[in-house]
Length: 604
Ligand code: SF4
Image (tube, rainbow, N blue to C red; front, side):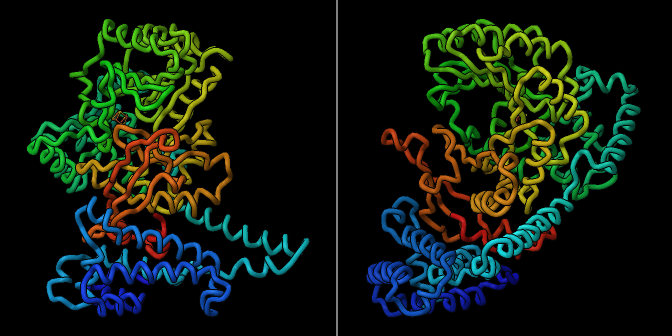
């Protein structure tokens, strides 16, 4: 793809009408929008019939099936955005905007932006089979048989494999020798700074006591970029907490932000935009509980969205605070932690005991492994005591933030409650990038696995791990380290975390074009969008969501249907995404070749 999305608005308008001159003609020749709507629906219906009609003209008959299938999908989306019901739901009419544009009404161009035009250029190209999805590379394979066919096919598969390797080489893992060496040096600096030695480093309580929460300590230890210093200053002025464990800080590149540590820094250094978003939410009284947890908590400490599993939150702090955390509205600094009283926990247990359909309890928070062993022993024991609970998950980032917490005392607690064939105790952790998987993390995971316990990973698909095959490398390294990739979460619509958000189309593209090339055991996690109050919608299941609108600023509006829609008349949910246009431009500014992402427009 040429960098056409960077063209000025006038040029994009020319491209729009060049992509579908017939639509321009319909709009220009209609007396009003309703007439145009009527004729356009008719036009799209005919187009869809022609695509698969053996008596169509030769253009349609000869069109590649991949283009035809894509055209059908684009017709569905274009029809959706022209429906009056969807105009009513979203309060905008792209058809009206296109109508004015075709009629060259002077103010029409001011009502839309480049992102809007790029979406419609892509749709217009798509509906008539001109998305550029046709490839001839499999034709020869189809025309041969036997060993000859196998050899041709094998060459083709070799080229896919080398494509994967080429991308993987761009990213560093935490096992890379140069990275290990460089991190050892920073670790030595951190120990020296705090007057400590190697034995302290292995002691998780030492890490808790030396969590970095002020700009001075941080800037004494690593060089901050001007934008990072600005964000941190704003956070300090406005009481927005940040916390970094010494272990996680040792993953930074000391002298300068590089491509190998930008995703690490971004996770823990609040940006200016993030702080401004939090301040604005506070001023406007916006509830940052995007997931609506308060409305899914039937009793203190419990969140329930599914029939058999629920969440228990005994603790609302973490040794380290992730900027994009969905619970940023309730995560407190480790010093002013609120731990649920034993009495409240007992009330929650009694509530679970009355519901024998609940077979699984996810203990999360905050990070529950920040709690002391004797409390954890008691807590897990209370849950394990419930006859119908057959699995206890512990949601923790400890293997990433303080891997030394996985010590003998904790393993003794785990050992008590993981009973083969009776009750599973499992860890669900949260690695975001292959560069976070360090030899120390591996050691922690090995200890857990030595008890026969499973370790799963949930990653959030953010801007900082969304480049081609970046997250594929994470999954590959996870599997090699004994961790099963479990979920890939789409970022939420939390306005303050806009820096992290990625269009849903990119997750779908990653799943189909990158994960699909990797072996099944590696790619086996599920990309999901967590619908507020209702729970996860699987993004691979196209029936569970659809694009219903494209706003004048180019943002797509999705309609999600809840996971239980096939059982009952369930609620739906409208979600406004970030624009593909802004995402691609940001990638380009960061040095990516956006031609690599050209098909993103055709994932809905
Ligand atoms: S470890 Fe989990 S709960 Fe804690 S701040 Fe990070 S994302 Fe939030």
